[in-house]
Structures are given as C-alpha cells and as structure tokens.
Length: 308
Ligand SMILES: Nc1ncnc2c1ncn2[C@@H]1O[C@H](COP(=O)(O)OP(=O)(O)OP(=O)(O)O)[C@@H](O)[C@H]1O
Ligand SMILES: [Mg+2]
Image 1 (cartoon, rainbow, N blue to C red):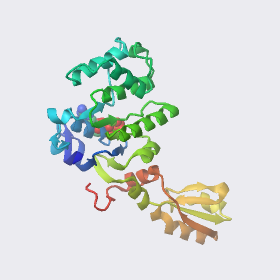
Image 2 (image 1 turned 90 degrees about the vertical axis):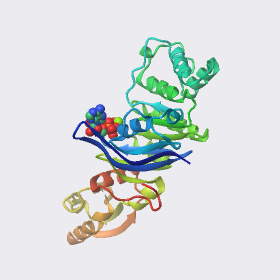
Image 3 (image 1 turned 180 degrees about the vertical axis):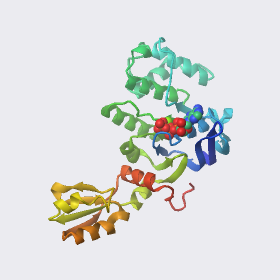
Image 4 (image 1 turned 135 degrees about the horizontal axis):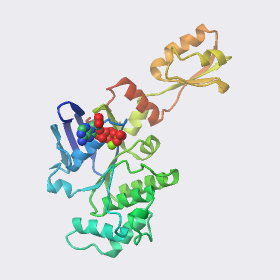
C-alpha cells in the first residue's frame, strides 16, 4: 500500500494562477521522499493538498488509500507547515500537551511530551514559552508538534529551513531515525545535499510540473557531468563559455566540468584552440547538478518503471 498516491493533481488559484499541473507521484510506505523545486514551483501547494488544507482544481490524492482531506486521511498525517504561528506565551511543554490533546483520545501524559522534547533536541526547555525560542528551536518545536499524534506519515514543509549547519545535520539524523521507527516521510527542501543524502526517492517540480520523479540512485546515474583535463589550457578553458555556458572551470588545475550535452562542442572548441586533452572522465553528479540541469532543460527523465 502506498502512503501517498497523487494522480494528475492540478491547482489554479483564482482564474489564472496556475500553481500545479498534472502532478502524479507515489510515496511508498516507509520511505523518505524529497520534494524539490525553485521558489514558487508548487511544493507547498502540493503538500497543502495532501494535508487537506487546499482543494485541488484537478486530480486527486490518497493517503494510505483514503482521499486527502477526509478524517481517515488526516489521522494518518503529522504536518509541519512552512509558516507557523503558534501561541507564543504558553510554556512550550504545555503547548505541545495541548496539541497532543487534539490528536489523542486520552491524554498521552508528561512522559510522551518529554520524550518528544528530547527526541527533537529540546530537552529541559518545556517551561520556556515559544517567544523566547530561537528560529532553530521553533523549527524543532514544529517537528515535535508534527510527531505528537504519532501518525505514520509526516508531511514536512522545509524542516531544515532556518537551521544552522550543525542543527541541519541533527535534523537530517532525526529524519533518518524517524524512518528507522517506521515512519514515512515526505518533505520539501532547498537543502539539496541533505535531500541527496537521506531520501530514497525525489520529485523535482518546475513551474508546477513534475519534471522528474525517481530514486536518488537513478537520478544521479543519468546525468553525468564530464571533467576534461587539458594542458596548456588556461586561456582556452577560461574562454569556453560560448560553447559550454554551464561549464565550471578550475583554471589552476587545468580542468573543466561540462554537462553531458556540452561535452562534444567543448572538446571541439579546445582542440581547435590547440589544447592537448589529457583526459575525459565522467563524474558522479551532485543532486544540485542534476536539479539545475533539469530545471534548465524541462520535463524528461522519469525512472524506468517508476510511476511518475
Ligand atoms: N493562496 C494563494 N493564492 C494565489 N497564489 C498562490 C497562493 N499560494 C501560492 N500561490 C502561488 O502558487 C505558486 C506555487 O506556490 P507554492 O507556495 O506552492 O511554491 P513553493 O514551491 O512552496 O515555493 P517556496 O520554495 O518559495 O516555498 C506560486 O506562483 C505562488 O505565488
Ligand atoms: Mg513553499
């Protein structure tokens, strides 16, 4: 059974504000699915549809086989919104206890609240109201709030936003530990290195359309930048932009990294300049390379056999 099944989701705000178009994907139970895309690509809109906060203009979504927005679907979801405005004068422990009382039929007890505070790295902060929290502490509280109902599916809209590098790493480890506990995680992020490290599969949105949806391995497999080592190449390498505009040049090392489709023109250019090419090596791309490439190129590359 899939944790999420989105079919042909579309959303138009007002008459013309098209935020999502024909977005279909599935999230398997127990996996971490990363949703990436530039600002305004439609990530938050899609998440809000899954939560049941926004009605789709087209298509439908199922949460553990229940239509998104129904009580049965909502019971399966823990949600971290992109922007939150919690009551900030109440001691944070009491506030979490309040959220717990909304989702548990009987009070879950102090131990549950302290275990969540400890899980998100806020041990001992239960008496402090949120107005005294830093942004990073707020983000941790938000995650605790999403966990309070012990739901099997977590929909997290930018959980690492506003965190310092150390806290981002801790959040990453925390998300991995939640998968170990059997949760399914669906989160949006602009932190591509973390998405690459922890996600099983990734969806890439561009202007409201899903331009890729595949496992991290297959995404990183298909788009290889090539590293050309050249000598003596300083001037030629520095002037390669007209034929390989996305090239990244390391002039000091006599190396240039070019995307696959610019390899041939780049080699021809360097040869025409009389540069001796010492080697061409396919590099493993980072998710950032793949993302930038796809966002420039547009739709394409769905993993074989993977339902988009
Ligand atoms: N309530 C709304 N009314 C009108 N347009 C909206 C509304 N919410 C979002 N939009 C528009 O829908 C598009 C997608 O927005 P969305 O917030 O889903 O993007 P996002 O991918 O989450 O971006 P970001 O990375 O900046 O959070 C944008 O063009 C945005 O202006
Ligand atoms: Mg957003």
